[in-house]
Image (cartoon, rainbow, N blue to C red; front, side):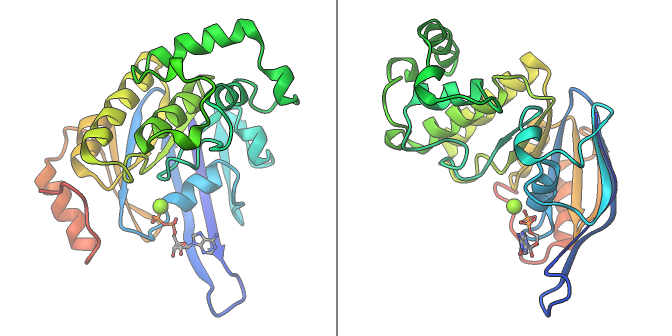
Length: 258
Ligand SMILES: Nc1ncnc2c1ncn2[C@@H]1O[C@H](COP(=O)(O)OP(=O)(O)O)[C@@H](O)[C@H]1O
Ligand SMILES: [Mg+2]
């Protein structure tokens, strides 16, 4: 599925702030699984997602997705295969556009278009049906600008938009961290439903150890750009997981850890 071989990434090369984040990092992500990624702040989790999705380029290393080397593809080209949801609910949507415009944009991802031509009548009903699955009443607010939605509604929309074209890979970067506990739970349940019904291969970064255990098939822990733990879910207890995490990550907190 996703295969990363010998990845190296250094920021600010040749300056006083030079920082090597990855040095010969390799990982293979299995098709149809949700891989939970744990690791302290600053250990390189988001950088890894930025490299996979083409926001950042690595100095070294080969990334293949479904057997295709994607190294040379630009971010917008990779977006055809890779869906992403960020921590900030506004990052995955265009706040000044309406729900209908946002969802139309994801539907036409990577194609040339003008917004007016994009929104076709027959598609509107289809989008309304898709939005209904969120159960948030968004199907009745198609012409509402997304900036007027709550964080949870925006994140639900982001999630829907990131998965509606059934991406080969879905990257979730602490996508519930900015939400209150109840909304976070709802979004996690919705995430689970979307990825399991469509069998979407997912990498999920989270600081919530309970969510990681509940929703992942495999758990990978990173420390300073290295994999320090890689287990099938169920092979390790929450207590053991916490103890490994705490032994490496002084001062960095996991939420709902105990
Ligand atoms: N674009 C960038 N330029 C310079 N340094 C960066 C950049 N992105 C991340 N870093 C640094 O790389 C390290 C890893 O960051 P990040 O991948 O965001 O960590 P995590 O997501 O695990 O918290 C941090 O020290 C961060 O400051
Ligand atoms: Mg991060």
